[in-house]
Image (cartoon, rainbow, N blue to C red; front, side, top):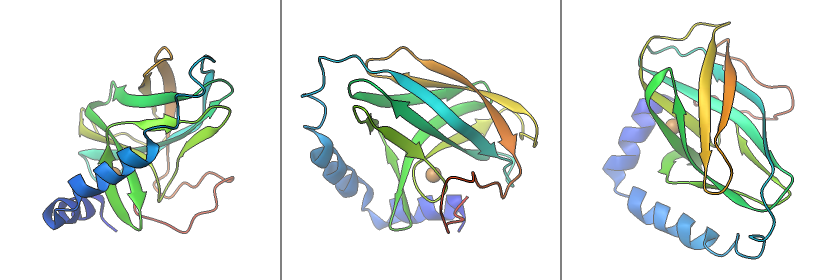
Length: 166
Ligand code: CU
């Protein structure tokens, strides 16, 4: 499935606003009980599959939290003029304003699910290159990661997935 085609269909269908409202409502009360404990975040397994298109790439990683709840609010990169947060549910991709990082839990960005979308690329990244990515949070300080560019078909071994939307 083509990234751009999916997005166009999402906007054309007019379901974006409605779906985003549902997600926000569902998550609204999840972080108040853990707010006393500071989040302790760690990023692991980050990678960017070498993109087939010159102007767009996806980013994946796992955020592990050994403290209180936090929120991933945005991401920036030296490679991209624009980085947005996306979720994929039922094969449909949606842009999200933020992602909850649960207390003593983890947040996965993996093929076929959540992903970063890097656009307005300054150049087309090649396999073996490192891309600097900075994740921004509601409570924690920003985390800067050197993300390796992997082959286009790369799958991290720990993830069981049959999706190939990127
Ligand atoms: Cu996307």
